[in-house]
Image (tube, rainbow, N blue to C red):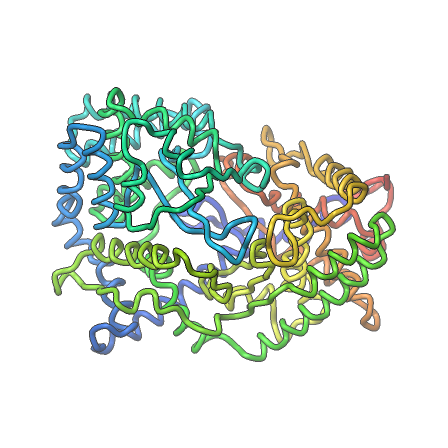
Length: 619
């Protein structure tokens, strides 16, 4: 305990942890995902026992599941479901025709690859939608374009997808080289992972004329209306460097490269719906870059497909069968307690001015809380026809129809106010999140189970589990990203100059405290990448300890042990290396050990002193 708290608490589990086939890691969260997967499998198997009226949610769940599971039909069809789209890309003989082809494919399948338009909340006015636009994008994270091993794996995968699509090996290899070179250049001009959370670097608003001037070789306005949207006055660009580089390729000189790029990206996006050869190609790639061994069963893949594509219908049944209203009420009470504690803590901050405190308290008062499931289930897919192979459908067709339903729903939002009652996370997800633009925290039903939460657990154990998650998400309202948004979810500098300077000094100390720590030999933590998640963890423990201190004889040992348990993880080295470059959360061991040492209650509970490995001298 005194030298490596995380390892000591989780020793038995870590010693016996086995990474499941088809995965690159094992964890508390993954085990709960698997338990939910079994529950969902039971739901689907029960539904399979009856005939359901066409158009009902049960019929759609059953037929979608069976279409994903029917590998015989998928193998028999092979590339056939997408052949006409690949041929259409190949036959385009001008830039204008290629762009129109891509728009037509997008209107049929929901999988356009060249020019994307989407309505999302405006960072400066969260009650309104603004059109977002992006064009060519790298398929993988930056490290994939600089690591020789990952480059080789990407080249092999691109080549394999192209040969499965009908190219001969030599041509596929040559085309893969060109696609990878293009994506490498795009990657070099794109934001780093942590920069996407910086509103100063990831929010550029263009007029429509300014945007159109980037594409002089075709009519940009026509592409917007042909996609189904009305012409907007303003368009938001998240990654300006990437877009500017991307726009340079939209000319006749790069026609063949754009055709090859669109073909690859289309197959990359749709291949999972086709024959086993495409699945095996992805598995081989995952083995090379993430260290994945073995593979998931066809049933697992089919269940996961239902989870991903029909979360609304599945979630409604899941909640009816597995969620407890008592749990919802219990968590609502915990949230209310935490918010009151945060109000006290903010009010007592010595370094923050009265003016900024008032704005912070106002933001707390306006936090919306969603627990368990939405008050109203979305009707997005009510008019979407899902068919089994026996009824003339296919897995590919079903996925496309679902994609199109969401695209059409997005198009219909133009000119409408934002509906902030919607959920963006399936109710069975083992997760939670804070939404800066809605100033709300969401706790799906899926996370309200052991070891995060239990009726039979002690208060200390529940606070170390679900309590930490709740307080963590509340803290996100005031981390280095959340602090840029006001109580309405709008980007707004509500800090005084002195308070902002003090805050930045404190966040810099957090960044340094979590930076350069060994994850495994040769792989270190990135304090800048993980900054806002580390702030949330520190704030959460501080808040939980305050609440726990109000109990008679608080069990701090149980609290800290519970916190260590929820983050226990084992993973392949390749995955650890990958996550160290892209994951905004600290590695589990660091997330536990480096966080708990900041609190006197931890030292007192376990008798930590200067000679122990967990000891960190106070600053």
